[in-house]
Length: 155
Image 1 (spheres, helix red, strand yellow):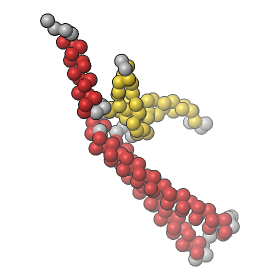
Image 2 (image 1 turned 90 degrees about the vertical axis):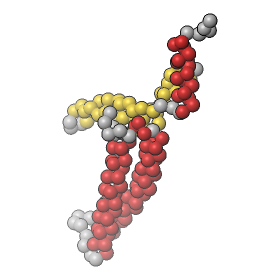
Image 3 (image 1 turned 30 degrees about the vertical axis):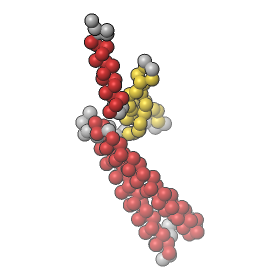
Image 4 (image 1 turned 120 degrees about the horizontal axis):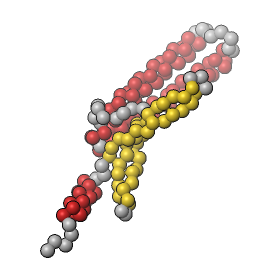
């Protein structure tokens, strides 16, 4: 005498194992169509890491992280490294421009005082971007450790 069919028993066992080991994360893509003034409509695909979970009898998804146009966490990490390098190059450029201004080299058509003030403002804005990018890079590294199946180079 079996109290329940084997299929139901197998399903309940897999649910128990899933909840015991953690949630399963996977990558989904959302194609987005947008319109630009000069180029007409364009298509982009944005990628997200989501995890499935149960709420009663329903299976739902929870967004964990938005990858943007990067297809996986490895690509996102590479993009963040590139972003940090670009910001550091931008900071060097502004510091060089400020140094040139201190020695009397100013650009045309702009008063030296406003040019100096604007360059300092751009420099400080660029310096504020680095900690945010570093924080996001650390977050991606934690996600890579937690969800190794979302790090693969091929999807």
